[in-house]
Amino acid sequence: MTTEYQTRPSLEDFQSAAERLKNAVRRTPLLRTRHLRRPLHPGLQIKLECLQVTGAFKARGASNALLLLPDEAVQRGVITASGGNHGEALAYAAWARGVPSVIYLPESAPPHKAERVRAWKGEAVITGAVWDDANEAALARARAEGLTYVHAFADPAVIAGQGTVAVEILKQDSGCSAMVVPIGGGGLIAGMAAAAKALKPDIRIIGVEPTGAPTLKESLAAGAVVTLPQVTSRAGTLSPRRSENINLRIVQDCVDDIVLVTDDEMKEAARWLWFEMGIAAELSGAAAVAAVMTGRVSCPDDLSLAAVVSGSGTDGVD
Image 1 (cartoon, one colour):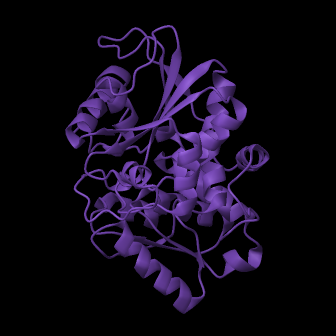
Image 2: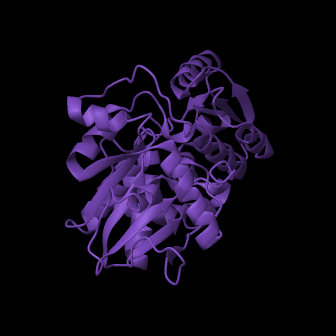
């Protein structure tokens, strides 16, 4: 564990993280989707975390974790495993603090993810079929070399950093009635749900997973963390085989529903984002919009909802 938090983050922790991060990451736009050829919902707003530094919300959690670590821990070097976006984010955060980073990526990660890790002066190591395999290798190297491991989604400091997305949304639109949030391992949904419910208890939080990687939906149904036998989605950053207890507990307490979308539906949503909004989002980045587009998330027309778009790229529109 990389932080002072002993339990799941509190509202004070989220607010402290927002203050800590104000000079480390960007405050991203909340864009209304008005005057379009093909509108999805009159109250839909898009939180553009694809414009975040490194192209995803992950910069928030990684930066918060490293800013909380003592110098001795970071000077040894930091290490993680990632489907791509957390790895880029940790490499960025390490670069900003002037320390070395090692990022393990699965073979399923797009090649440009490793290139971008290296652009932030990180060491990129490709191993294993999926994130879970890369994570085992990263943990083994951390133990062998004394590197400081930062979990992609189950570290409370990472969760607190991700929760600042919700804090920002409610500052930008205090009347927001629902947030639609993509789910990978569960760091973003846990952070946003806990922060949003602390600030506005009646807000609805809906998570979105791929049909080929329903990690937290299956865990909710079982009442315990489930390890999927396989993942079949092409959205690698949304496709770990398991989450962790801290994420599941927060989701059980704070998330109203989890819906599933197919890869083809995410691709259609990515094309909509490009054609209608000029936004280049990778497949996983369009998951929340896909849930609205397909009607799996509905909201009365006179209420506003915010969908998180995170993960810049062109694989969704190719």
